[in-house]
Amino acid sequence: MPGGIAHQAKTFLDTSGRQYAESPLPAWASSIAILYQLPDSKRLYNSRLLPRPWTVLLFSSLFIASGWMAYDNAPIDGAGTTAAWSAIYCIMNGSPRKLGKLLRFGRVAPLGITGFAAANTVTHGYYYLTVPRSKEEVEELKRLQGE
Image 1: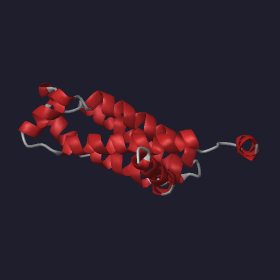
Image 2 (image 1 turned 120 degrees about the horizontal axis):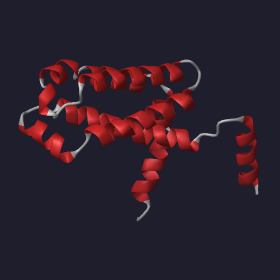
Image 3 (image 1 turned 45 degrees about the horizontal axis):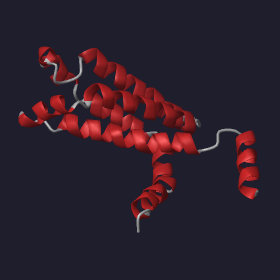
């Protein structure tokens, strides 16, 4: 069955992924996980393997803010912000050369954090792009599905 995996992924994103993206906990967990790198990023500042300390603090505070959006009854905006900043984090810190060197030194936390950010990009991005935002969009969607 050629569409089996794609159908299962879409079903997962529409059910469990939706609940995951509406919660502020993934954004806050990302913030804590990124902040976990702060002592090592200060110590290994010149190695260019870990993010810079100011980058760690910036991403951590942005994930706290996006989690707060989801907590403060704006889950769509919080999901969009989380997806965008997770994608930027993956682009900045997910290079195979950098992660490969870290794995050789026995540091698996940066790889896990980058994987977590990639998962947040997919789940929160799908939620942000597929959920109608306003009453007009809901009415338009119902009208299009009724035809």
